[in-house]
Image (cartoon, rainbow, N blue to C red; front, side):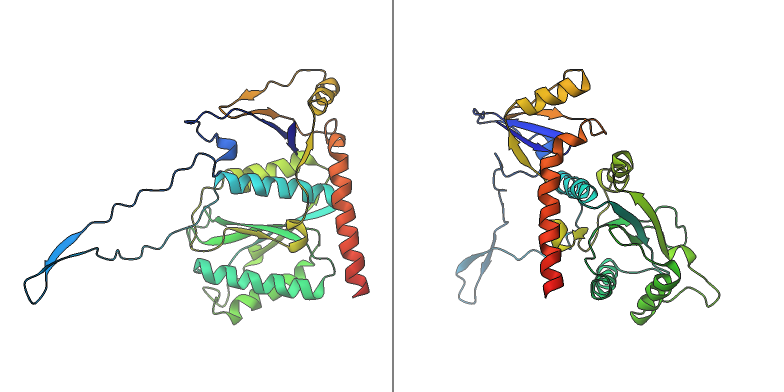
Amino acid sequence: MLKNTYGLSVAISSKIHKDAKTIEIFAGSSLNRKPPVKNKPIITIEDLNGVEIQEVPEKPKIKKLRSMSQRTKQKIRKKVTAFSQAYEKLNFLTLTFVNRVEDRKAVAILGRFLDNCNKQLKDFQYIWVAERQTKNLTFPDNIHFHLITNKYFKIEKYWEYWIKLQERNGILPRSQDYKASSSFDIRRLNAKNIKAIGQYITKYIIKNKDEFDCQVWNCSKKISMLYTDFYSDYDFIHNIERILETEIEPIPAEYCTVYPVPLNRLTLPMYEKLNEKNKNLINNNLSRFIKD
């Protein structure tokens, strides 16, 4: 039995070695994970009567930054690919801030932007990821956001709204003459161009190692509901090999075997059942939305 997702098939081994380690593709899995050992220092003190008391001092709270784990990246990759197959037209939106901003405040402002879009645009769907700016020398490492959405925004209208939304939340341009024309950038993305989708995944997700004091990604409710996996027998791999006219080299691991499947115009039809299931889910939800 195979568990298939876009570009990947996995056969779980029936025998798992007791010392097996999690391979990279499943990093973050709870399989074979041992609970961390907490060695708390013990301090011996004397009370007013000279009686010794053992106490465990409280550790100062350290702010823990968030980043994308390998498991999270894998989840986003599947959601983005399913998104691209469920909608014919997608757009790539980059939202940048006009001045330095704290991570949590930035996510709160993004949330208000998305809430407004939900109110104004019917069936507004999206996936967003956070990234640190590297080319901005004025505000190095400032947070900004990349979104894939099924809606196209008129720059003149939404650029002005994005700037005003920042101003209402205390994020002002560094000078009155400064025109942050690149703060709102959108370009069309061919949803059927799986190569372009793959480039987005590689550049903004797989290579994203940044750390943040906030949420690092999210998606709309409907996108979170999209199916990304299905089960099959080994005929699925055999049919892929027949189409490609070559054998797929499996990657053996300690508790599973991974079959990397190239995503292209030849192999995409093999996922049509999964795509149809997602389209039906979207259409049913949209019909309910119209009735309400």
